[in-house]
Length: 387
Image (cartoon, rainbow, N blue to C red; front, side, top):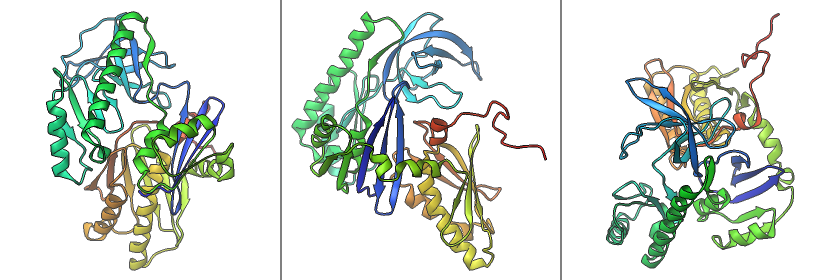
């Protein structure tokens, strides 16, 4: 995606980030200050041990987030945890709480910098699949490996190939110091406690899109200075920018079940506890060629809505007309192209035997619906009335 403008706006206990491309609003992210944010590190307290399938078990961990977080006893590259109620454990949030579910946490901490991700429990050096200059990436991977200390791992991010070796070395030292600070705090603080707060996500957005970004709007001079430290383009201060640029209205629209398509028909989006169901309604469009064009338009709109609403997990799409692969091939290709650079790692699985197109998208944050609505206590989310 080629972002052109980013708007940051704060309101009471929450702040929002809106990303615009040449077609309009493309992404919205809302953060509540009272939530444990993805990437934060906590000293948690085990409150309950629970049995899982296949003789595995997990733990419910108090991180002072309103709901207990879930920790699996088994994690790749780590010894299986064997703890009991009342013990303290250092964990990192990988999925924020949503609806009635608490956060998901892991012991395998990763600290992200501008150029690299520090992995204290991993003995390897990898680089992002999005790096085009493989030769330079391999050269830098060797440099990082030669400058690693003891058992530690690193992941070179996409921006790493734009830095010099000295910048990489400085960031390595800074991330190591951050991790040591976390360890020191864990030895002296009482659980539950926040050990490390991830930087303002606005800076991550700016770095991600800075190649095409032309303008950033923030709400304070202090944040303006921070953004100028990572972005050379226009950075201005404006209050209530969401209202000024119509973002608040777009959020209301993004909470609707139905999205009308420009050339007829619509898509219906239903978020359930198990998966997201999307139906393409052809409306008055019936001709074979028109149905094909409708599905192509719907595919582009669905990819946009997945980002805009932050839909995640298993996404099942029922397109209009025939579900034969020869008709669906171009539709699937459109979804793959539009979601290729998705930061949440979307995988278009293809056509199921039932004729539906399936997508798996990494879940990191709650959807807009989870952030702005709660389940109706009267109907328990069924949304039906008796005639």
